[in-house]
Length: 424
Image (cartoon, rainbow, N blue to C red; front, side, top):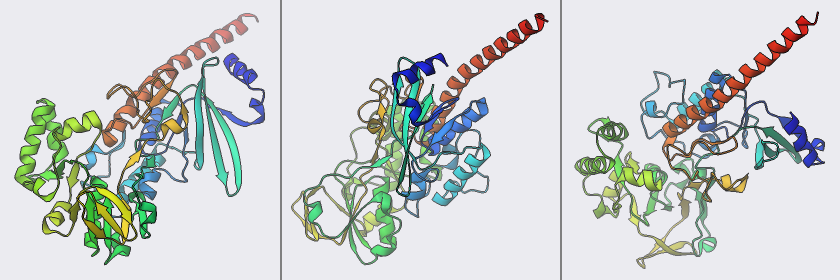
């Protein structure tokens, strides 16, 4: 408490702003990572506050995903700590089912985020030993500023907080519809149109497939090499098979075996314009964070010519695109499946734990804990299972300190009580 008053004296305007002293950690982000951390803290008996800039949990899933989306991995690898998926859910739950699961999860663990509260800045005050988290709440035209004072700060804004929009020559002159994949819901409104999909990751592949299914004519830009793997190999989940082999074999050997099995299932994909990287899919994921594409039908459309694979873009002009090979295509719409990035550098005033790209500097599994009570969850590039692992570690670490201090406080209270009794 003495440190808190010291903090107040530093800033004369401190008590004139709306502020809250949080008796526990502040978690920034109410996506799966933030919810998992909150649930694990609840199990440890540690109070917390969750701040969320949107008006709902898991806003990426609820607002920025297409309708046909399903989990790409079997549900047992996507469940959050302390609560499995319902048994009647399919092996690959739909977007709606996953959102229902997250809403049930939040209700079960009594997680009630503060919605529409956008974090503007967070910095550690060396003098007091507290984090100062400043937020803005917008309600219509009203703007209210808050400040949260806490000992622990958990960054749970994730790897995909902001869309990436590339700077491509002539894009502003194109004239047709241009959207990011996060705004794409269904191919229904693109029926009969020629659509350029920029990007060949899981989103680009699946958007292209969905466009085909709605009788559009997609051309997919494949600028660099990409690993395309079947979602299942001989009836077994590709991820599950790789995970099993990694228990016994080195990663380089697992990569070689996975590529041999992929060739047996999919054939030679390079003749369709999908050149494979020189580094294996698992090693590439671990070292560069590039996720392999798990095919759910797009490759068949590529082989049949329904999805046209094209090289990189040179420039756009009115109603058309010129490719690096000199060919020009007439197109009606552009969908940018160009990915996402972390937004941590825009609000976290800290340079030791996080790098400039918004990811922890320390590689997995050591990127969850920084100094001064700073933690990160969901930045492992290992999906929901990586976020769950982080959440468990963070809650145990905070819970251990919390329990020790609570125990000491109880001892002091009992000792004081005994002294008071002895005076009578």
